[in-house]
Image (cartoon, rainbow, N blue to C red; front, side):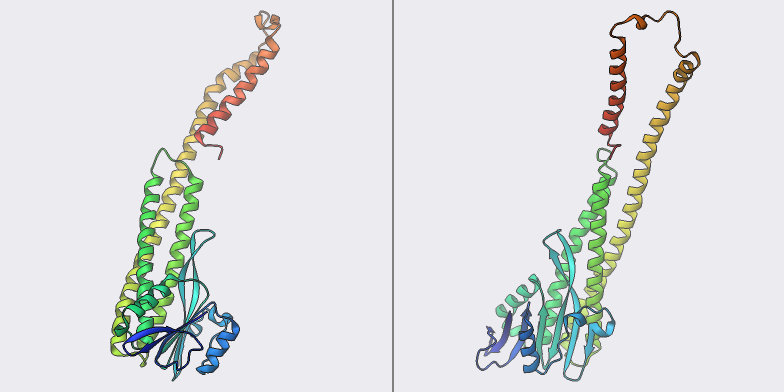
Length: 316
């Protein structure tokens, strides 16, 4: 699907690819494009559009490059995963060519919908593709900040849960901790990638001074978010250490109980072993129900510790 946004008088209108007299184009947004659509845009504007393999390369030269006519940026944007309720980084391609912004994306990113609505509602503020990409990065960084705020709340809640003596769902807490660590790494990777792209744009002569001013503000926000994410990662490492220590304490308590029980049972076991219970007067030997009674006691003596340990959660 291709969306084209162009200036017309004092307005910005959304156009179709085959509309006549396509002029003053600001932004061409390709969402889940076909190979034919990508080829058409590349031929029409004489662009070298990176392939899917080139878009995913991690070398710095593959994430940003510039020639006399255009700037090409491949950078990570976060997208929620519907299957496992996590976030994943997907590469978005931005090409700035003759003041026109071209975006190639595979997936539905809310930041693009919000930017499109902003363009249509405030046409006077957007006169070229550089202003559009600046707005996209601004909205994306704001969303990253909101995600990190929610992440911080989850981190504090998990830390408090570690010291809750009534909760011993350590498997669940470890899984939650793992998800938070993975989320934090995805956010950091996305922020690092955007910082690299914006830093390179600031070194270019193509953006105007006002655009560079806006990008500088966005870059400061990204740096603060990266610092926050690093602090959060240290907090997660601290929680992992606390959780590990708490598990060790609980295990030591269990071992201590077993040790006490073993020591308590040693004297009667020793006495029974020495004498072998071979006394002449043992009334139980004459009981007709003595044998089944002993079998029942053996079953109960096995079942009772099992149920007790299960209630304590030691069998998980």
